[in-house]
Length: 461
Image 1: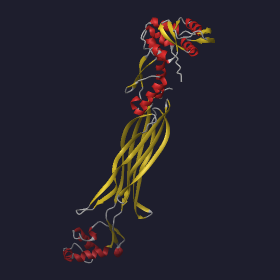
Image 2: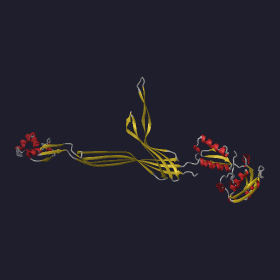
Image 3: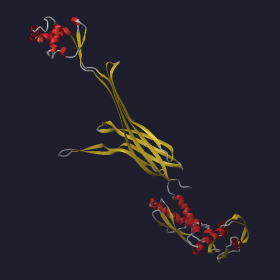
């Protein structure tokens, strides 16, 4: 298969005004004096051409229009008749490519205003064409495997004819003609363009709230109801000698049961009687009775507490790359036990593995445009159930998965209820008459915020 070359005449001609290693127009303009830039302005002018004659005549006429003299090598057969060519508003570069394709020649710069016309084949290319050495930056080159590097070397050798490229950590050095270097550089820049990157700023808040409330009265555990006359007679009989002394002294009257009982209570002799304690009395005469009970407590309390814990992490990921964020601990779980029986004491050898308890968050960003990021989020919450089966603890697991599009720099918030418990207790005389009421509420929430920041946008194609 024959390889077709299209030399860039504008670049190679300018090279004679300075450094011959120039490969791009911007570098040429920056590295040469004003006189060179004037030549660049002249060579980049546009012309409309009417060309008729053999190959030598049309090449001479075309380059003369741009102020360039063409000299023909002995290998060029300029007598071949060419078709009539009409070119409208073309520059030197376009004119040279058209003539090279039609006449099967290529052009070697001799000076700023003269070129050598040579028949296009591999032998002449190797002999006449100037070679340029250039180092091409490839940011992703260090991550290539040996097989991928071999494929890259085969691409340069088989497609562009560039032999023995030198690989560096993030660049590759090649030597070839300026035209092929431009084509190879453009191809490699598209194949190994730097990947877009996203910085995910993730914050996880654990909010635990406790609310305790107690309101009401506490009734006495026991109540005593007694007949006053009966208790008074019992008090008098247990203190008969003291009663005789009181009667002899004229302090009380014989037969006055309540009066004698009051005197004994005042004298401190009713310590073991219910009459010696505070009581509530009802009625009169022989049917009078008293009621005695322990103290009554009134209570009113309110307790509120809140605890917040913060975990913050930043994940710097390439476009489409997954990152994992964990908050929690690793817990050992026995999987198998092995009993070793021997003549001595038998032993049991357990085998266990560690499982992740807590929050595991996986995020994968994908840049869909310059200002929007598609986030794939997968959240899993794992905790101990509190019970076990065959000595193996049972784990609770909750998972959440979502895809959402977030503008770059905007924070998205996700809230999950981890647990909620409520305890209600009542006390009363009857089920419908409550004297004491208490409520305990405990709840825990997980709040996750994710802010994507595009640190390297998508490369333009």
